[in-house]
Length: 175
Image (cartoon, rainbow, N blue to C red; front, top):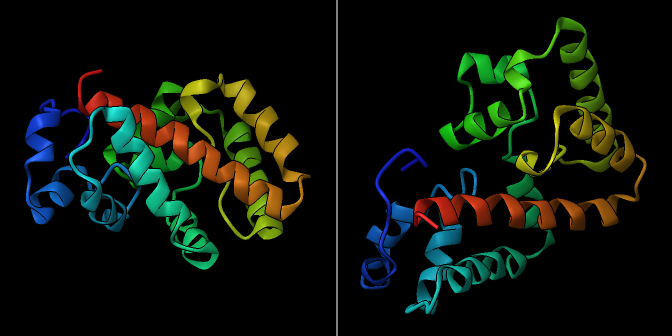
C-alpha cells in the first residue's frame, strides 16, 4: 500500500489479524514489514501516534545490528533513482517533494559523492526527512552530519526515521 491508496481507519486496523495488519502497514518502514508485525501485539492503539510509537519501539528494541541492517535498506538520496522509479512509491514522492528529481548533472554528481563519503564513514546511507528541508538544506545537512561521530549519527538516522514514518503513517490514516 502506498500513500496514494485508500485511507485507513484505526478501529479497523486495531481489529485486523496479524497478517492483514502487516499487509496494511508493512511498507511504512522501508522494506521492513517486520516492524508492523512486531507492533501488532500492542493493539488496540488509542491513536495513530500510539501506533507509531509502538512501531518505533519495535525498531529500537531490535538491537543495533538489526537497526543497522534496517537502515542499510533505505535508498540513498538520488535524483537519478527518483527519475528511474527505482525505489518505493513513498520514497519517490518524498524525494520529489524536495525537488531531487530535477537536480542538475553537477548537483547529482555532488550528491552521489557526498552519499558515498557519508556511507563510507558511517556504514549506513544518509537518512533525512526530506519533507523538513529544502534542496539546499538537504545538501547542507548532509555536509554537516558527515562529520559527526558514527554512533551519534546512527541515533540521528533513527530520529529521522521517526519523522519519515510518522508522516507516512499520518498520511495513511488521512491525518
